[in-house]
Amino acid sequence: MSHLVRKLENFVRLSAADRLMLNRAAAQRVRTFAPRTDIAREGEKPKDVHLILNGWACRYKQLEDGRRQIVSFFLPGDICDLNIFILREMDHSIGTITPVSIADLPREFFDEISAGYPRIATAFWWETLVNAAIQREWTMNLGQRTASERMAHLLCELFFRLRLAGLADDHSCSFPLTQADLAEATGLSKVHVNRTLQELRASNLIVLKGKMLVLPDLDRLMSAGLFNANYLHLDREGRQLDSNE
Amino acid sequence: MSHLVRKLENFVRLSAADRLMLNRAAAQRVRTFAPRTDIAREGEKPKDVHLILNGWACRYKQLEDGRRQIVSFFLPGDICDLNIFILREMDHSIGTITPVSIADLPREFFDEISAGYPRIATAFWWETLVNAAIQREWTMNLGQRTASERMAHLLCELFFRLRLAGLADDHSCSFPLTQADLAEATGLSKVHVNRTLQELRASNLIVLKGKMLVLPDLDRLMSAGLFNANYLHLDREGRQLDSNE
DNA sequence: GCATCGTGCTAACATAAGTTATTGTCGGCG
DNA sequence: CGCCGACAATAACTTATGTTAGCACGATGC
Image (tube, rainbow over all chains, first blue to last red; front, side, top):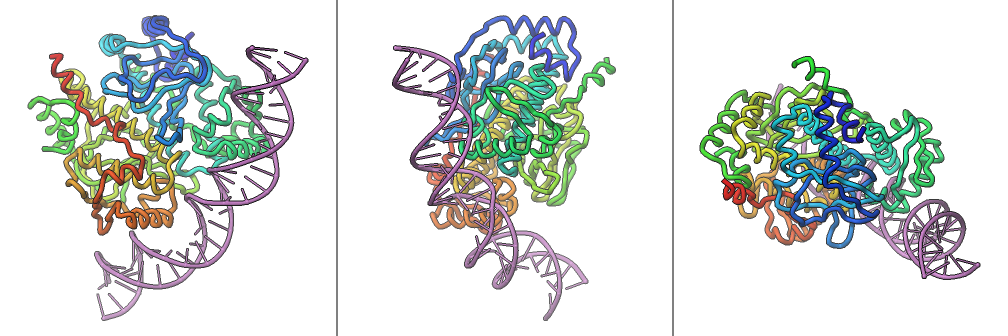
């Protein structure tokens, strides 16, 4: 089962036809990208919506003087900006972290969805709203949390999201981000990211080595990061929708 | 003309019927709130979408220990979270800054829009995408910009948004935020906000006194804040849509 | 007309985080 | 094999920003 279907089924119950529709769209117009390359660039006209099939990517913005901020991460099953094609140009870039494969979803795909696949349409709205909530939480993270809280929070979020897509074990997940990536995502310097990770390691909250992250005690990491998963809206609203039909 | 219509017309050309529909919805189910009160609270079940008719409000999140972050501002004409009712509970609160009047837009209103008002639907998508872009820009702001850049950037953004809704003159606008509000929005301490404002004043970039903000030289303020308005997507895409009809 | 409160301002001091630099390790590649 | 580049780790030092505290002003209310 694809990561997208897996993720969406956490929220709505999809029919066989729904799943077929999604899997068919995910198999057409597939492209692959090397690590550390751009999928789309700020200033370009957005043409398609991108669905991440495999690998990690990120959305980033850059100032004229080179300062760079990663504003979000894309994991397998994530969709980049529904309906983006109504805008004239991209206000940010999308770049890969690892090797990535994506499917380009054309405008017509979304027309079909809204015409004949109400459950998928609802699930896509859920995706949109959760992404907005994540972005707000990042604002909170950068504005109010200390370095170690911030790092702990980010690790929790990524772990929860990976688990949702079926990409994490009980206590561990693959983790391809470098400390430089973490610095650009948290707004900290590379050196301070290193210090902060040492601190989390010393408290036995994380084991991070060789692209693998182990979280021996998720509850403690969550408190350390003041992490409250409510903003991910993991509860399945589908039950209520089903009962209305 | 209402602030909402005025704002949306910057993006799509609305018909008389579109405008009537929006103005009718804005006149029903109106409520007013005193300054510094909550319109909605984290944890509640979202019932309606709120349209801000008059006054300033904000979205904020709070940590258990009391730290508070304003994650966005609502100005007249702004809509709080399209389609929010598909989520089970609010992950943030909405509070007023000034006296505020709002119209509650029920689910059925949006059903009507998507059934029979395609231009409004497109404009609402534009609103949603711009709000997401603003939230990303705030992430950038908190992560990469220094205190004075951050403050200059925020002031530019608010000024541009007010102008879009027809609420600003060439060089000035009313500005009800206290320094404590600015602190919660920028992630700085109150004291440092004060220092930063003094600095901007000393450079003749702003005149801020008695709830009134004057920007004698917007271009210089924009460079000081590394402000690039592209993320507000002010260009009217409407022309292209019109020509397709 | 006096107390009170919210707001703005300023000073002195404390500290979290940034900067620059060096070193070590590992894996890939010529 | 040995060089090189990416990444991680750590030390020494600087600086931006936070903290605590106190004062002044104006609006509000009794």
